[in-house]
Length: 190
Image (cartoon, rainbow, N blue to C red; front, side):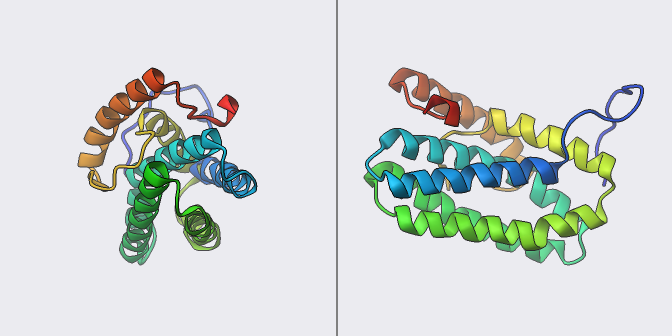
């Protein structure tokens, strides 16, 4: 993996592997879709799901898919397929946010996304990329996620370098809107 070097830490690089980070977030997303199915009228759960999934997809587009393109044989096709599915999820998220419709379709799309990553993408990445690089990617992924938009923006760039420039800017605007509207955006807010 061709990543810029990090400063020496005097040992093992601290942090979690991108595989572990993504798997934990997938569990959280599945839990949120379940909660929304149980309480479809709960606007806070819907807001947290929209924000969490928007941040997650932005971080995947910035770091996970480029790593797959670089390190995995056939990675171009896998990443392109995942980007197309992410685009469809962002459009469903936008519909959920605007009208409150499409919960079942969104839940099914999230389950497909999680399954595709768990069954194919993450195991391939784990096989092909050294563990030190996976931890570095995990650190970058978590940082990107915190700066990412909290609302769906299907029209913004989905590939580097432009998504790494645009997403944090859009994320600032989203976070300002969230504060002004007192919108819940994290599971801890529920």
